[in-house]
Image (tube, rainbow, N blue to C red):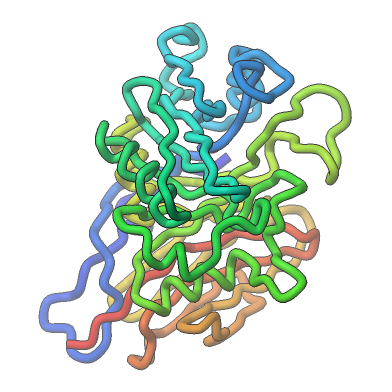
Length: 333
């Protein structure tokens, strides 16, 4: 799937000592590997059509390396499925805290939590979101805000006020979540850029939100495999995987695979894993969602100019797949 890579090629580097002018501000992850996983899926314990073991087995057989079973207000202890866990596959405990404010659905995933958590309510939409985020943090778990456009529930101004949350679904494979927006409502990438431009450091994840493992696989069904993340870590360890996810050490995808992401003080280089005869376009995107530069080459390179606040990348392929490289932030010395 993704080759293990050398520290020299894949190290994300910090600012070079003595570097003058603008530089990318990136923590170091030397010698890390890629691990593919999904943080949002469902079983018969809530509203999925397959038992937890069947669901976990599907991902393992498709060469995913980690999975969070995130049933609505239900906790599945990974120990009950320990026979599926080995050096190549990890189950990370989780839950989708499912609440609402008036008619607006509020769904917050809790990743790497120790037990079932109770969904929270409040007298405002923001308060309801914040209380659920805080509930996840109270047990040292990692929250992520799910499908904000589902039910057109959570607007960008409310998201901007949420504290202590680092992850936002920018792609969800469920057919009813309105990733692209519409009717005057912004799509989730536009919302993401609004948050980043406003100064929030938040990272965009892709998930499949799978419910339908049986029967037809198609665009009107909530099937597995439609979105995932690939996290960089030194080992297949739950705490490290989640910590690095929250630090933006990953890319999100609906089909495009990357061989390498190299970030140096003054440049970003993206190497795409070639799939048969597919063609690719890489857009480097900055404040306000503005495209800073585009490339159809496979190694796509961006050189820092100095007027950027952040730079992220979206790679699109000729079959409709995409990958999103997380924003890196620019520091002027």
